[in-house]
Length: 317
Image (cartoon, rainbow, N blue to C red; front, top):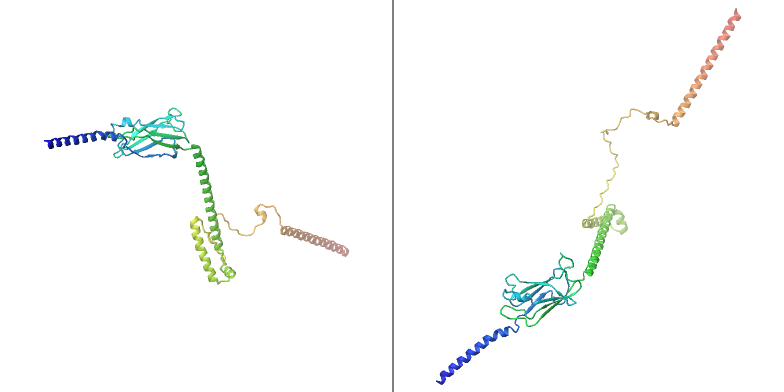
């Protein structure tokens, strides 16, 4: 009788202990078994863009279930450096495996109507996650989680971008100048190698002519590689003039005319008189004068002889 009573008592006590533990589990769970894992951006991050700022939050429990999401979506507070509340929208993870992911997007008031809102530049913002954020099963964070980040300084970034652009332009021009200088140098070396005299080099360096020729060929090969690298061109070798005169082509040009003989300058329409022509004309005039004088003397002599003959005939009569 005593043994059966003891057994019944033990069963009752064990049952009571199990019921107590079962009832106590939700109480312990509500004490805070949900943990915050990480965020993007993290606390202390800087240079955060001022447009479309989204804060990714990761937890180790299911915080996006439909039964608890209406309460969890309101468990955040976003403030600027002056303590002013900034609007936000919370979005639960939509893919399988993203039950512990929440995206909080800042929705500040726009400066102008119809434009998206922007956070203030070079300002500190604070996102507070409430300790009451709950996971499926009833566990909560148990304490607030605070994330602070700083937005970028747009003016400083603009100055940095301008400086970088100027430096890039300077680098580009310097590279172009250097490349062009190397090209000109390689082309000048190529022109000098074309005119290189192996006999002179052999005399200056006290080496044989064959060794001088070999040095020139090596220099030409090296110069050829440099020209290919910088995009230069080697000068074309000059054609050697032959000692034998070239025969003129038998073919006549279309606008050429055959000259039959010499012509005077006046034939081409010129009034210029050369010294030879003037001398020739002077001699012709002198010769004509001589002939005229001789003709006059001859005429006078004939007249005189006729008169003397007539006198002789008269005397005879």
